[in-house]
Amino acid sequence: MSEEMERYETAEVQPATADVQAAEARTQGIEAKGVLELRAPFTFEGQEHKDIPYDFGRITRRDIRDWAKQRPGMVTSVVLDLDGQEMIFCKAAGIPAEMLDSFDVRDYTQALGLAVGFFGS
Image (cartoon, rainbow, N blue to C red; front, top):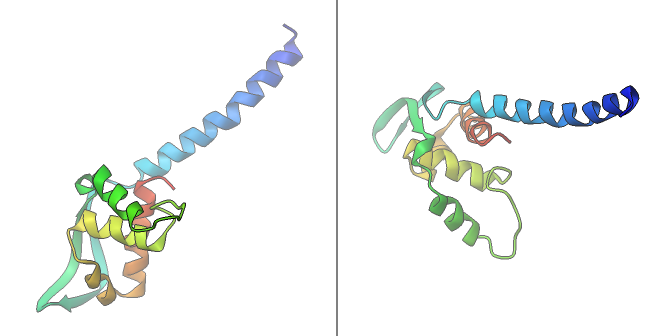
């Protein structure tokens, strides 16, 4: 094989490898367990919240499938859908979805960012 052909084949592989490595780095950047430190603490159902512990290990395949069944005829990704992002974070944090209404918009955005980041999207 000519040297020029070898360079061409190598060039074809490198971008794909870089994309895979970048996706892995994004996923690895979000810990499965952690604590979301709230910028704006709030009270929900009589309890003050200054932080929200989360564990993405709580999410099961069934959770994702049940969410998808609520959207018949729609082809979407749980990570790309706002309701899906909320479901992921709420399941991971063990909180009711209604609690998100009490979040400051910056905390809300950070919570959803954790969900999206964990799944590497």
